[in-house]
Length: 315
Image (cartoon, rainbow, N blue to C red; front, side):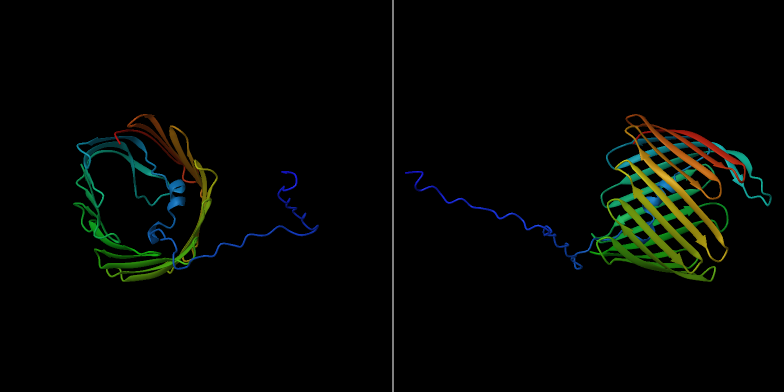
């Protein structure tokens, strides 16, 4: 009886020769739900990580002690030569040494940083989230030298798909910037500034295109600056970067190439530029809260060689 009432067999027709498979429709872009771009002042952030490492010369020791979850103290000792201005092509250095005391307060909505050096300089930074979208940033440097102290206050507003910033500084400095996402990967922005003390003003424009594997940026300003940068993420641990700097008023041109390599226990960053300068910075994690740092910079054109080593204790 089962053979008499067996279900019918479904026969699938073979594909017609020469017919192409169905092509998936491209995903539509929701222009009302674009991502928020990074701040205008940080559009070259990925390139600067490789091309502008924190190089130093001589010996450096940093110690950070946490008193509680929000408050910590830091001590830094630095010994090494300091370059002084000279009209000759040769680099003139004098030996220097100084100690730096710091205090840090870190809270989800408030961050305070202070540094006091033995030469009398006082540096302070502030970041306060006034609302979910509005942030106040401030930094100041006080020194006993005349006309060398300065301060600046920034108001940053973060929208759904844009960011804007307004700056106030001493010397009648005013600035404003705006950056807007125009697609899921492309953002465009501009800035204006006025320095009343020097009677100078300027305007600039910038573009940034980023994906999961690359970041390309371009920036031009009325001051004569043209800056281009490109970062290629080879893997999660390796990235390559390059930039091109041109000033069409002074006719200065500089191109550089850098790398950022993150290993399990260390991080290596370096660069080489068209002026014959080669630099590298190695950060080795020896143990939990203990890092060893090596810095090197060689300028073949000026015959200037800088080497430094340091130790960082604490997180």
